[in-house]
Length: 136
Image 1 (cartoon, rainbow, N blue to C red):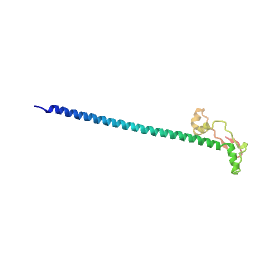
Image 2: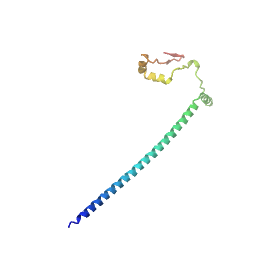
Image 3: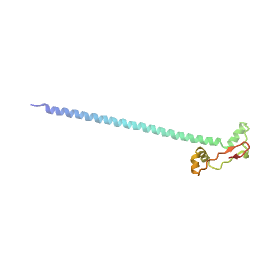
Image 4: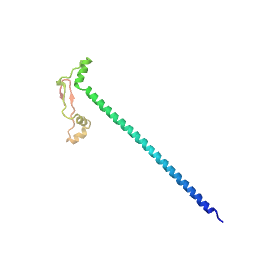
């Protein structure tokens, strides 16, 4: 009689169940490892965001401190405190630019682009002489 048939089925069933358990365990381990990686990435992102906020806060404080130190009153006090003997320039030597400085600098850098937009007019540079006033 053939008694090996039930054993062969039991062996195949045992091997199949071990493969399923092994694959399930591997999948579970992969999921846990992936969740750990996500957690590490989230913590790193949170720390970087905190550092960015702190750096932006320090930059804002530094910008405020620089603006406070550049005010005319503070500069005049520093001039007197350090006895530098600096005097403000006479009004005749100052040239006031009424247009936007940013636009003017961009126009000087990209004169050919703005010349095409303004109907062919190129930007006229401002030249200064020691006698005062501006020349074209």
